[in-house]
Image 1 (cartoon, protein in one colour):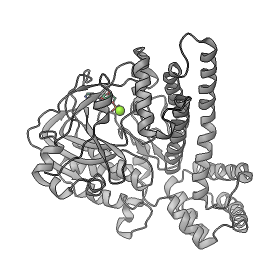
Image 2 (tube, protein in one colour; image 1 turned 90 degrees about the horizontal axis):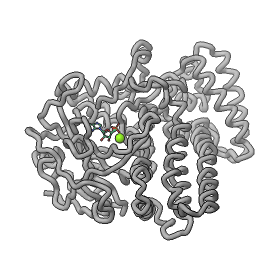
Image 3 (cartoon, helix red, strand yellow; image 1 turned 180 degrees about the vertical axis):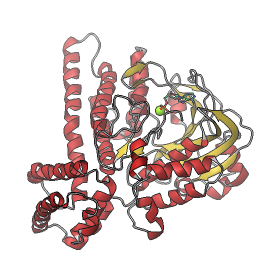
Image 4 (cartoon, protein in one colour; image 1 turned 120 degrees about the horizontal axis):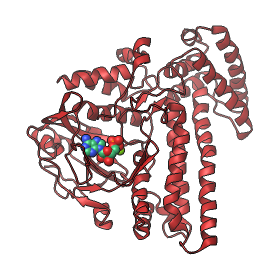
Length: 502
Ligand code: AMP
Ligand code: MG
């Protein structure tokens, strides 16, 4: 049996923040997926985790030595409404490992049975949604976007009751931590300021150790989280990712994407795109994501105020509120800067300076307006702009019905690229190459993901494995994967819905 070198700081340092709990035993464990590269990163012997050992371990029947499974407490705003107690209703943190690079990583189950936080739920998960976490999480990782990752998925041999009976599974998830905005909200809601401080200091030691002990560390923590989220959401936006359920319990402190439930990638560009069947108001629509991130950060700020000022010191409270408000108000600027940085890479502008910001923002906004007006596929539009950088306009022009409008924009863009080169930019060939590293050829397209998961649910893993293999190199045009690069037929795009019933 391979050794997991657990070092469980959360369980050790934060008693009262969780309930110790055991995973349910399941009838017929079978390993569906093992992430061998990630296992190696974690210092685990992948060969020892294949087969029966891994199946029984990753299904929760035989825990690795040193695991101390706990269900973590947290609260959260769900679609704007506050639930003071959510918590791990079907997840368990097994413990933490220090990885090959010295980073502390959480190892957690999802779908391992009921816990004291399960409320009405069964604590279980189905094969399809857990393999979905694998596909989307690995795609995000390959796209260079911070993400929790799947180490393994094991089928349980149980039937899980959803709208339909489905085969059950357990996901093993790896994260920088499972600390969320909602973790802080839990202790604020209970009025437990000492625990809030303990949590904040733990968080700082784990994610922002440079801030430890500083007198203004709680404000600095807020700033650090805002910066990470600004960068993360900008990355989402630049690949067309829609999280779908940006509740405060699904926003990490680490800046990793977490909880791939009703998420999906946009195909034709439209900021109002929503896929989730329960998001009637479009709260978590593509274009709303930066606003929601800011809203969630304001909820985090509220939890830190009692740590920034004593409750009976009116002037200190006012100062703390002003400081925290300034951080929240600065978020749109942080986000805009991160977004433009990414967009410049996609536009092929590599020698730009702050003096170019206004003009470049207009240039990119006009490009996006063209994509919107002509329902152009977001991924292909950006990708084929790289061809145009080398003077091959035809593949790009094929995506547009009104080519004259495109040509007008291309003329402006080329003038801007010429100016970029005059300022030290890389020239046409290198520009195109770099643009192809900023705009992927492949994203997990919804119809492909659905088809792969449907086959896996019926027992055929081959489509899932093929798709995963393709998504691991999203920037390389590999002809054998050309089908995955094609947009869904328009009818399929129009009716596409994702479901929370995971
Ligand atoms: P999510 O929307 O997946 O982030 O989950 C929100 C909350 O619902 C968390 O507290 C989960 O633990 C809980 N939850 C979701 N599905 C289940 C389930 N099948 N059984 C118990 N709790 C669940
Ligand atoms: Mg969640």
